[in-house]
Length: 90
Image (cartoon, rainbow, N blue to C red; front, side):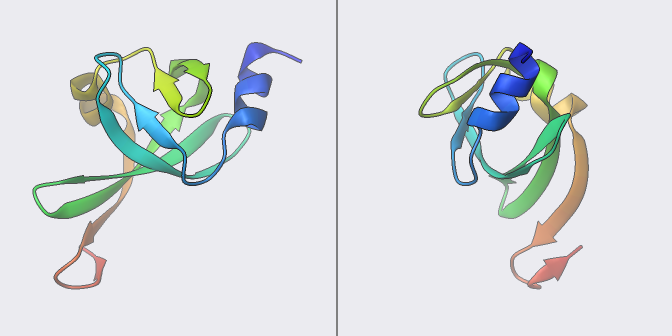
């Protein structure tokens, strides 16, 4: 089993996701064979971002990423932007 496979098996829904600088940046919603989805909030809106398993540095009680929160915000694929005031995707 490769380290990517081991990370995929170890990740669970609702685990916190921590950036390289130690900042809690979101929560895992689900995983697949090559990535996981993370929900994060910014300026009152929730974003679902797709994070490649290759970005993971470690998995324990949290999923630790090897990239900064700015890098993740700029480079992760954002699939859904949820506007809480509207209760639906914007």
